[in-house]
Image (cartoon, rainbow, N blue to C red; front, side, top):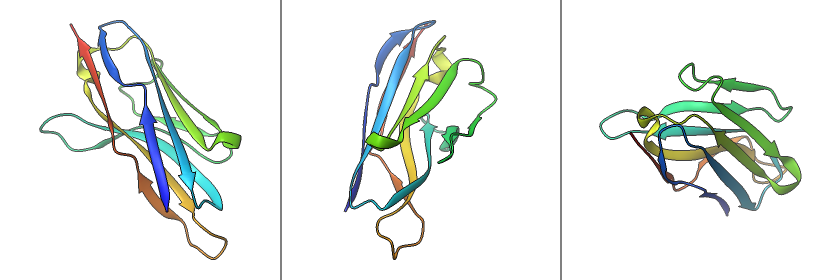
Length: 121
């Protein structure tokens, strides 16, 4: 069984910073891409940032220059450093990983439970 556990959300004033972490555990053979998505009330879930197994990154236009995604492959962990936060960044942030649970498995997608980020004006 694979689990993704997020941490680091909270309440912050506009202009502040937060760092999210997501650790993958359980039966894992290999991890490909890892990423962060977010969903604000009444809106669809959207991609925030993604990082490949080789370290290539991609960001939503709305967060470029403010957010940085990174990963520690030895710890099966992905991070999201969020700076210059804005009220419109308020959402539940979800971790996603595409991984192979075993050598015989194909790539499968897994989600974390979500962590709330609230930015006050």
